[in-house]
Amino acid sequence: MKTTVIGIALIALAVAPGFPSGPAAHATSITCSGLSHSHWRDRMDPAQARLAITTEDGDVTLLLTDRDVAFQLSERTFGKVQRRLRDAEDDHQDNWLASVIVTTVTSTVREVLDRSFAYHVRDLRDVSYEDGHLVFVSRHGRVVFGGDGCCDSDVTGAFSEEDALHFVREFRRLKAEQ
Image 1 (cartoon, helix red, strand yellow):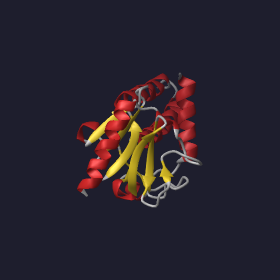
Image 2 (tube, one colour):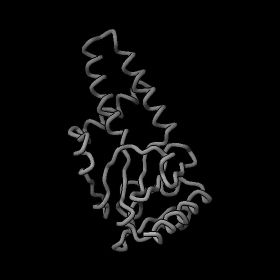
Image 3 (cartoon, rainbow, N blue to C red):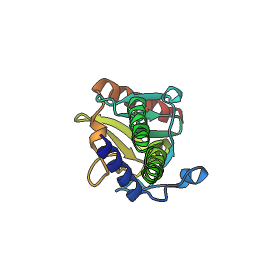
């Protein structure tokens, strides 16, 4: 377990050593095959979302707000990771140098994981459910959050059919209101 946590932390540091916080974090965007309108935002409270559904394995939550569609770690998974990071810090309290390194790494990992990966509703044309996957189509007609060349399409197929169809209906209701 310690090796896994430290491995995740090192990967997070390698990928995002200058990850912004505060107001600058809202201006950060990443591009991944058509995700030019995606952005990182503060983690959201699922209870405050218009709709929140969680993958069948319980790891990721998809949220719909009046402004964004966002993916983030589920509350359960986020809590588990937080506990593992605390355990890693506690395991190295006896060695001051290891403690400083682990605390620095775990703080960075917490900063990264305490975010949502979001896409503005206004930049999406539609969401549908096809062949067991949610399909997000940009206003330009490109598939985002999945499809060829995208970061990870597995999560779009990890929701129950019932939840996915509920998400589609609520997204379309929101778009009709706008």
